[in-house]
Image (cartoon, rainbow over all chains, first blue to last red; front, top):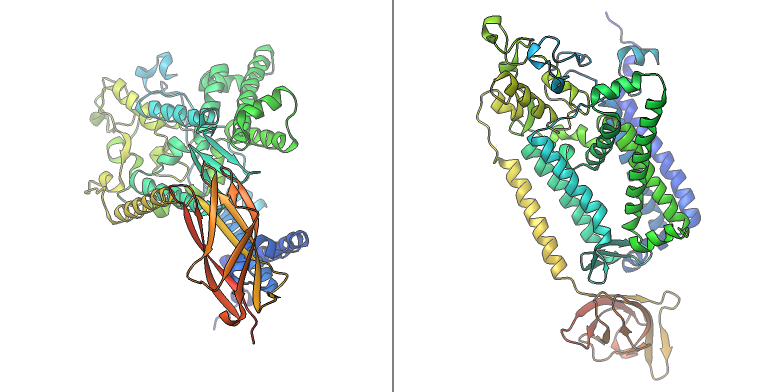
Length: 119
Length: 458
């Protein structure tokens, strides 16, 4: 009977990627919140809007952190997507890896293209 | 690392430099026209005055945006958000209909790269001469040409940076500050930053921005379908490719119409071979169509071996331009543009923010009168001076006083103290009230805002 290797129960590549995206975004949002709110009050950022809805300072901190976390998540997820879908990762017609385009003198095998215009 | 290198997946592998060959033709002319129009808009608009202001000026310190006689305030942020949505949706619409028209003709990366390439060709010559020059050892000719090219590039980049800052600081004042060496630190920073970005993106990075950095290229697949116009090589007609004389009959030699001159690859600004099929790196500039058509003319074959077509058309299936997604995009786009135009036309050129004093809930005055104090921020968004009247709507128990007198010059922001008083018998706790602001001058500009009035709770 085939025994399941312990590594099989680990996360696959996509799960690992998302874990990194979420964790790094969280850490960055934490650091960003500490720096930003060390300088300004979240109520000042919300201004009139907070006043109109009578937002408490705790809720304002929470909302601002959540917004920052969301932005960091978006940036990280987009970065992951860009890296994972870079060019050269496949053939346009699904025939495996694409080779580098070959270039040669147009007139080499086409004697009618031997004027300076085609060189 | 070694695994990444051998698999060739690294984003950091060194790509060979692309030397795009110059091309003429219908689409090249269109691309140049688009370049002139767009760069013209960018470089000329800040110099045109309109209704007493620079035609396009994003005055950040004053928090006002001037766009051809219209003034937008921070409170008009919704228009900016809607404008971005319209821009995004337009991109979806255009892409679904005709593929990456944006990339090929209108993207700033393409437009400025085209301008930088033009300067490069002017100084160093076309593809073959540039390749020879780069391969040659440093000598008088190479130093002179490279220096001249850098001089042109840097001057153009600096002018671009200067114009960019000119959208945020009145450009004539900015020019004067430069001439008199009185440019501010932030203006200097942004001028150099944008110049550097232009130089780096259009001069150095070029196609690498499109291939590796631009997210639009990665998402375009979601906007494409089999009826989207793309630039494609007609494989059925072109294969088997091979060299020949014009007098040869291709069929007799078992050849298609592609003479394998590789000119389509040589003119490609991203260095791809369109004959390999639709690729993410293709920015749809149509340079390959122009050069292939010239070759077809020379060989006396029909044009269009590489052409704008659809996947369905290539497979000899019926191709439809009007299809559900196009209709939906068009309807939403039309509704949004119409809505924005209507809202801009219907804007109330008066802004009022009535904020209750946070330090005290209310004040008890003699004769059983309760008073709430408010700070009023009034913005005259009109181009005329106005005096305003302020009254409480549908509440005769309450009285209102304001100081100083609310008179505002055009585009002036004023801060006032408003006292609202009511007898104790008027109610308990928190009460909603409406305050109407209107101009004394005709035509009357009017706005009603909600406020909260606090009374004793017991």
